[in-house]
Image (tube, rainbow, N blue to C red; front, side):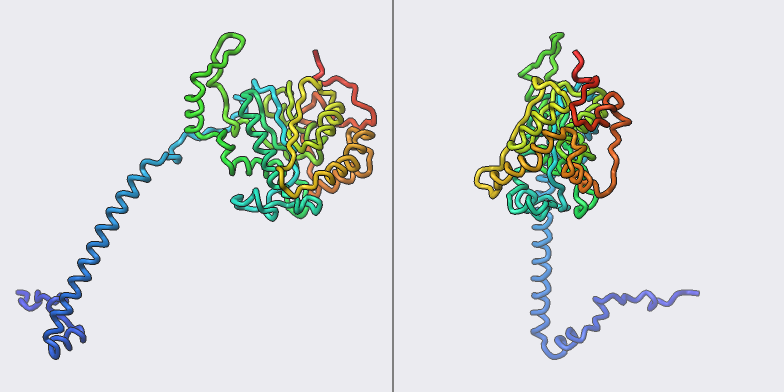
Length: 362
């Protein structure tokens, strides 16, 4: 059947205007219809101008954005222990606290971002700890044969199972390794800067471009419970990663702990003094750190105890300190990974261990 023509009648709003306001204006205020039309045209023009402006600003922003480095397409520099077999220098930063905060934006100033013991509070300690970490990164960057180890276990029950070593690693990562990190663009820039300063090895080969970024030469040691274990366990951690024990050692800590590390702990491990260095970093000038009280505590709570008990096995205070700092009942794995020094790891003295050690040969 033939479809009636009225079935295709235009029923669009242009024809079917049921607006009460429009009807009122048309019937009662003929002049107002013109004003409404002008107002609508003005609104359309304003909308058009704003749209054009938005498009223009968007184009400018996009061009600026496209000029930025495309980090999402950078080659990731993954940690590869196979490339670290020639490292020989252990750079050790001993841990003193764990970080609690998720955001590290104020970690240098805010003590509440850290878990601190009562004697550590109100001492501007975060500033000092950051300076230790930064020094370790810079020393490692200066020596292509160095492996940086942040050492310290899960020592605080109230802080949960957070490692001191991992806290320090997080902080270095937060500060982008102070310019010594590991993105492909940073490595390319560093390689370009080194091209004019060749470093020759014994065979006359230019080794200046073989340096691995600090981020790829840094690991954590997550089981140490005191300063002696910081040093001993880091020897093992170095061996786990590199495949052999370090030939040189540099320890970074507070300056008032020099005798403890450089004399007592080093002697207990019988590591040669000629290959051992200590970098003492005191709290920054003007801080609230009570250096006199710290020195007194060092003498009474550490030096005197380790002098008579070099391995920390007999002094009630040292034994209790280790027990309290292992609330999560963890066991270090180094008897398995470092069988060459198994006897040293099990030695409790009180005399100095006299057995064979890999670093005392020759």
